[in-house]
Every structure is written in structure tokens, then in C-alpha cells.
Image 1 (cartoon, rainbow, N blue to C red):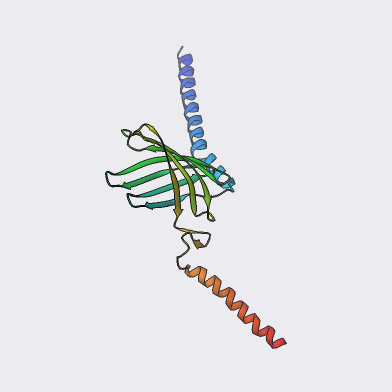
Image 2: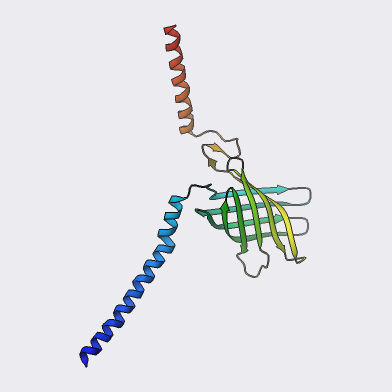
Length: 197
């Protein structure tokens, strides 16, 4: 009788341990290994980083800041929108999810504060050699309970592929060195060719 009870307890413990191990392996695969393999295989456009935009007219001004993390085709991140107008001033923070496909980025915005009912979706095209994000921002206008549409233009201000996205930053020392090395090599080769003539 004790023998059967011992085997039953052993079977239950073995089953629990097997389930725990399989659950841990599945969690490790879905959260770490699979995204890592997908990111290594991804050869598409990289849009992760910080994107910013500003708008100012006679009546109002606004600032936008989008911070994205990318795993192959999927995105996650945060978005902050600051507005200053004649009759109101506010700052909204959103959690962002999205996907990229063939240079087009679809983003979904959900407010951090669940008391806010406004949400948004955006479809943008990556332009300017990967430095500009241009499209439309569709949002739920909670004041009139309708869909509002505004232009959505953001810029990436950090360096991309050896040049500054704004086009006015001084080159890095390494870039200058590489450029000067090319010019010095060409200058050195030129007199040698002239001496042969």
C-alpha cells in the first residue's frame, strides 16, 4: 500500500515539474529566443529611436515626441503630445504599438491615463532617406465625439547612415578622418602620376 502511495506522489510531483519546465521553456521561447531570431533575420527598414515634430501658427503651437523600440516588423513605444492654444493647454501621453511594411508604418496610440477616452491611429510613410515620417494622425475627438484628422510629420534628429537628418550638423571626427584620408590618398597619387608624365 505504501509502495502505491509513493508511486502516486512521485507521479504527481513528476507531472508538476514537467509542466513547470515546459511552461518555462515556452515562456523563454516566446519572450526571448523567437524575437531574437526574428530580429537577426530582419533585413528591413529600422525606425527605432526618437522622432520629434513641432507645429506653430498664429493661434496655437504643439510639440510631439515619439520614442520607438523595434523588433523586426513590430513596434512598441511611447508618444507625448503637448498643445498650447488660446483657450486650452494640455499634455497627453500614449502607449504605442505598430507594424512596418514596405516603408509604411501603422501606429496605434492608447492613453496612459485610462480616464482619457481619446485614442488614435496613424499611417505614415518613411521618407528623406529614413529621417522623416509623414502621414496622417486620426484621433477620437472627445469634445465633439467625432474622428479628427491632422497631418503627422515627425523627424529623426540623430545621425542616420553617417549624416544628420536635419542636414546641418558638423561631421564626426571619424567621418572627417575617413574623408580626409580619401582626399590625401588622391592628392598623393596625383603628383606621382604627374611625375611619370
